Length: 177
Image (cartoon, rainbow, N blue to C red):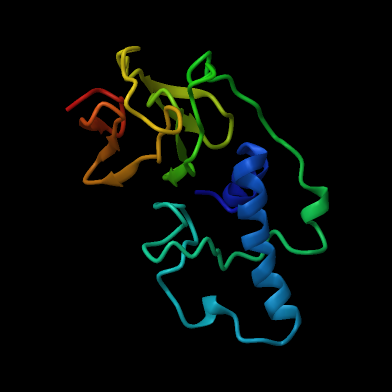
């Protein structure tokens, strides 16, 4: 990801995701301004180029050591692109409950319909889309159709779907493997 990548990421993701991420970024700056020891000074596992898992790292800390966004400039952030995911996950039965995953300049986003989108981080262009096509007859869920996001590994995107299937998608094309 280029130097401006994480800043563009925070400005580009939906407000429900951007706000916690922006807060996480600014907390680092506040800690350094206060003269405290920053978590990033002793933990090399913290995300610096990508956001590869829910919460940013395997400990789900929702913390980034990057300093490009801080308490002085966070109020000036603005969107750099907007994209459409069509009508995926737009019905009343759907819920959104996942963080995007970002790797190598691509943001992977899911919807309550269990569809997966790969978006170019610089432009918002949809690179590929996987349609889960779940049966409308699924009615055994308590709190609406929801998706908890994707996992990344070995050149694949993995998603546990509401119908109980685990799907592996090619990271470059979105094709089911």
